[in-house]
Length: 600
Image (tube, rainbow, N blue to C red; front, side, top):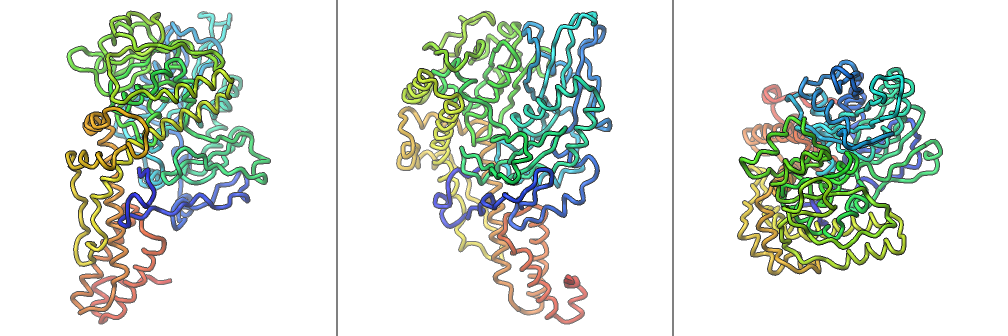
């Protein structure tokens, strides 16, 4: 996740070319987009090989209908497609997480999301293909490895014909993709139709999805669903943070019903409004992976607030566990509420009053009341002591003994308050807050990026006759020494104990996840540079040297294809041509020992 341009990484690492400036004006709504997602645009033949339900599976694991049975309680009534597999533990999790707690009193239609552990190590036949499509996604939008998301559309309406007196049912989309805005928009189309027309309608929707293009980052996709066409673009890791790259084109948009400017972002201002005097402290708590619980009156507010917290450190990926909606029936309930050990690094969203007692030993608790309209002023609130939190009836606020490392930025508070007074549109307030969090995170990460870039070996140390050089080790003390002259003070006006914040951050799962990702990217870059150096230096040597070189090149080509190394366009093709030419120049007996040149 490189936050800086090429100038920050020197001449050692080159950034991939921007692939998003291509003209999309000729794209028609109901056809698969053919814009290349990689340098050579060679993904289309792979998609042509996809089997029935493969395209559906690239977006969703399955769709569930959860109803209420007077004898059984919540139960999964339908799983579609019917061949989809869920373990009994997974079905139980989905049942309990798909309904609001009884105290929430959610009448009418409610949308929220949850996240739960994958019950078994289930491998998809699409594994390698999905890794390829996932390669260019930003860290925060990559597929979940050990968890599923559940996107819920819950309906509860009075029905005197039923013994219970209410119709209660949820339509749930189960997916590995964190596209919360997209899937909620999709449910707004599907769920009302399903509640009216039942399963035939669900089958038609699934068939529509199985004709969709796969979710390639960087492509503009037009997705027909039940007579409606949704237009989206999956972001890439190369996009400029804080911008939307969705192309508006009159020719194609004439048939498009819904254009989604984002597939995953929640309204930060609306979510943080009840506690926005403390947004900077909340950013620190999330950055450091502190144990946080959000107590809210409904699953919708609970899940939105947890997702807002997780996204406030974007483009840094939140690497600890988080549960947008958590219940006492969750399989991890005992694990996360035990008092025999310190609370784990996790963010929980809860609505049941029972948690006010069960989790009162947690160090940081956020109490969210009913989310106010943007026109109402939030009152100045001090951080409250944990002992004052006894029930869910407690006043909204942040209950913690945490002392922030950084001085509070009064300017952002005044700017948002002024916006409320002047009735600034909510979208504008959200953009201001998102930009603030982005700049704060970038100021924090830039010194780390700069130091990690210095661990990259010089290009002159790369030789085709040796293995690729290794990255130098990350040494915390050496990094700390760089902060005096090249710390966050270069890009941020905030004062405070930045050194203490970094020292704690280096112990967190967020740092570990970020550094693993950067190390993997830089190691792949070294492998790619090594391969390109081999391609440039192929020339005639003695027969023994030539055979040895050809064998090395074949290994490198296999690695480049297997690991999708970010080599320059044409490098692999040129290298194959060089190998063919080298082999043709050898005696026939050696040609037979190696391999036959590829035929055009």
